[in-house]
Length: 362
Image (cartoon, rainbow, N blue to C red; front, side, top):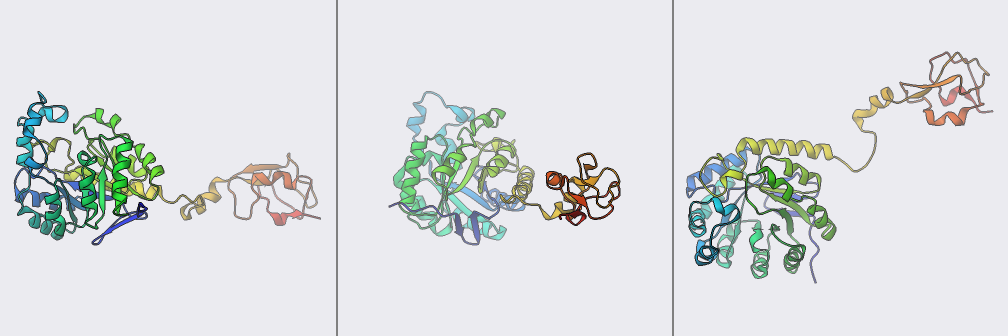
C-alpha cells in the first residue's frame, strides 16, 4: 500500500508546498573548492541573497565513481569533457571531510537557513542524518531503489531529482519512496551541466504538468542548471514550489560547477522576480478586484440618452447610446432589449445615464 503524497513538507521552521512561498535551495556542491571557510562564506552569501537553504553533496570518490570505469570509457564525455583532471580526481577534490558537516550545519543555523545534503552511500546517509531535516536524492541515484528506501526510512522529507530518466524510472523511484513515506517532493531536472543557451530547449518544464497529473498532491519542483531565471519563472508558473540551482560567488573560478552557477546578484534577482510572479499568479477565482472598483466605473459603458427624452417618451435604439462611464446604478448595454418600447418616468437630459428607476414598468 503506497502512501498519498503530502501537499506540504514541514521540517524545522520551514515549509514547502501549497500556499507557501517558493522555497529556494542554493546548491553549493563543489563550489567550496576544498575550503571550509569558503563554504561557510558561501552559506552566508546565499542567505543574504534570499536562499532558504544551502545544500551540499556528501560523497567519497571511492563510493560514487569507478576510476577504472571512467578511464575505460576512452574519453571524458558531456560536461565532464572540459575537466582538466580525471573524473575520479575531480570527485576526490570535491568530497567533504567528515568534520565539515557539523560546521556547515552551524553556519546554516547562524545564517537562518536550512542545511541539507545529497548523501551518496548508506554510510553517509547514516552519518549526516543527525544534522539534516530534509534529504535530496540526486538524479544519478534514481534507479538505486535500495538507497532511496534507506533515505526515506529516516522519517524526514525527501526531494527526488529526476534528470536523465524515463517516466517509468521516475514512477518506480516515486513508488519506492511512497512505500515508506508520504513526505516527498519530485523535481524535474536536466543533467547536462553546461552554461549554454542551448540548454533551455532541453529543460522540458512541461514535464511538471505530467507529474501533476500522476501525483496531484505531491510537492513539485525544478533542479535547474540553466543561466538566469527564465526556467525558474516558467517552473513556478507551472506549479513548482521548490527551486534548486547551483550557487557561487564567481563563475570564472576553476571548478566543475562554477560556470553554470548563480552569483549572489543573480540569485537576488531570481528571488525578487519570483516573488513578483507569485503575487501576479494570485487566485484562480475570477472576480472584480478591489483595485479595479473605480476602473469598473470608468471603463465600462452605460446606456445613455442620445437626445433629450421627455417623461412618457419611449426608449428606442435611436434615442439611446452606449458610452462610458458606467455609474453603479446605470444599465449596461446588455439590458437594451429589456427597455425598448418602455417609457421614461421622468425627463432625461441628453447624455444622462439610464437607471432602473428611470423606467416606467407599467
